Image (cartoon, rainbow, N blue to C red; front, top):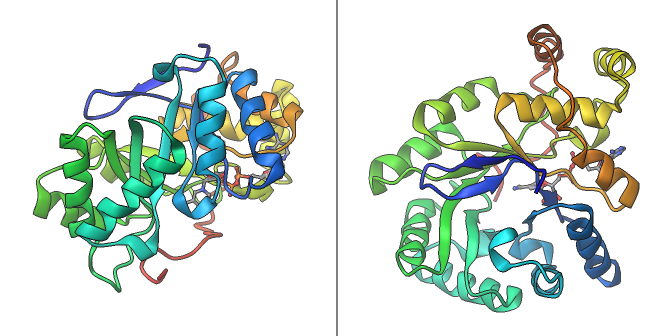
Length: 273
Ligand code: NAD
């Protein structure tokens, strides 16, 4: 496919651009996910919490694509922390997805208040040894949470999926990831539209004949991030994929770095429970 891939620390290959399916549910879900695959997306980001694992699995099976050409991520929800609960949660997700193996299984939030994420990660290690999941990782983990998982289990999560967009660029966490071979995956990569009216983004879009969304996604690609934008509009879904035929210069990348406001939109991982 036309989408470049990144090699995870465990050797598995993951598309750098995927399709996020949060809040795509009900009657619309199956059609939208199938459309994404038809448009060329080869990576789908779901979660137990999103309530659409069945639709994701069905779209993958009915796409006619070889299973190894679609990368499927799902996530363990907050109520399912702890070793045994995590094993049961994975069984339930795998059953809903109806797929023999899951490409990437993530702990959705660290939930430090429950203090179980190390045990949960040990369950993910067991699932990986059993071959039920190819890669294991985390989401919304801070540096401290990552250090503890690595220190206590000896395994480095393949991926940390975190909120990341130009107004919340997470440069310190990205540097930590890079130093440890953790792939940075950006959720809300478009900041849910927050940066579309930014003067720096608009000026670059005008100069390069691209849309603000494309400028932002190209920035992610050049930073080395995996990004999973979401849209329900086929034209926008296609637009978000068309970011591999132009490049931002070093100066343009620096201009975008300059608009970072450390402005998170989602929950604080240390407080989310
Ligand atoms: P996003 O940054 O992808 O923004 C999505 C919104 O931007 C859409 O609702 C749409 O209205 C708009 N949009 C998308 N493309 C556009 C375009 N080309 N032009 C104009 N508008 C456009 O934010 P998101 O949906 O929050 O995040 C994407 C995915 O990240 C989710 O679907 C989910 O898979 C994942 N996610 C994960 C977590 C987590 O805790 N791990 C949290 C939130 C989201």
